[in-house]
Length: 515
Ligand code: N01
Image (cartoon, rainbow, N blue to C red; front, side, top):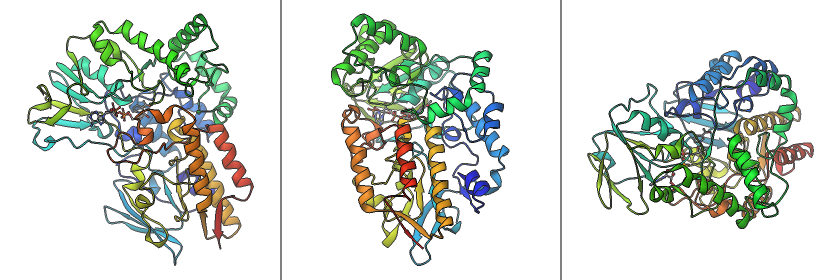
């Protein structure tokens, strides 16, 4: 976005960043095993063809340090740092209706005004540290996966407790278990995991992809989820059990998101179809985990497959066969408090030298509502969204002129390959600003009726699927008191891009402009 504002539009622009370096997610999430769940060749920027050709990824799924190196490389290559103010946490942004300008404040004392306010705060950047009683009495060290210390942590000879079994924990648990003397995993909801099948990439494959990048980008931009994957155009129930078994095994062997995003087309819509997919994965867990009682605890039974974000694993279930790993099901024995020595559940105390909170994020709305963003009439965004997010296209909010939210709630965002959706929003916002400049427009604002219709459309698509039936962070179910509203847009990356482009072509239908 900075590159587009400055180098394409010739605007003066400044980025404010809490961290002391670029990278966002990949700057903060440095826990052991952190790597991307998307194939590296499509987990990158596509706006610069030379950059695409030059950068060499070493693995199918790049590890956090490699992605951070890439993002630093991009920052250097496009000379971005000179317009980024690091170590600056934005606390307030308010729209001045007389001046038609935003005033932005940081915790460090900056006060700046700007015509446009673009929130590129990420969807999963506001860590959720549940309020466990007694945490302040704990004598050991504790860390959240999303705010990991830069020097790393040495788990050697340590007794470690980890709370949570989402995508972050699924990556971290096998790595921590290798180092630690003992690892206790506190599980609230078991997860359907599929093997990542990471590895080096064959140089011949790299060359073929590089030669085909234009077509790859086109396919990904017009796909449903931002991947080179599409559903099988058939019901899982129409396929014979033999055919299903063959297809499921193929997807299982391919690893990655294939099982999730290239499955039978009714898998996310029809309970029965979903159940046959879920049963295949449950069988895999039973085959992997040696202790049958333990296996049953690790098997998800309370929500349909694929309705929570698919974690990819490398030896996750195998790790529970190790003698130094213990699973505690907190549904059977809830965590009552953190004690000076560790974690106490309803039946005993587990002593830990280190506690890892893999407890996720206040997703999508959290990073925006924790900033005091005030629109017209001083209205707080957090108040406007007290019953869930209201947004037009997930990119603009009625009453908040000249504010844009990159991958905001109501856009495909977390139901897509993020770089693809980020680039789409950046291109679209750049187009808006160009349009405003060309027509001498001072403010652009989503209309309340357009916003209402879009918000209803987002809900309607979600409700036609099984996704809202799980207690996932997609609906804010992980945050006590958060309204249960499905936040990302399920209409697909390609169709969404088309809608955004059509709206632009019609002179930004659904927006009002003032000179
Ligand atoms: O967070 P999560 P995450 N007591 O919310 C549990 C992306 N990501 O950091 O399921 C006990 O998924 C909670 O339990 P439950 C990806 O989009 C990407 O793992 O709410 N447990 C759950 O098990 C992902 O989905 C990548 O019942 C509590 C866990 O903590 C998203 O980030 C890698 C609890 C939180 O899981 C978030 O993943 C990693 C409590 N009070 C993550 N509160 C890659 O692309 C919460 N939990 C590689």
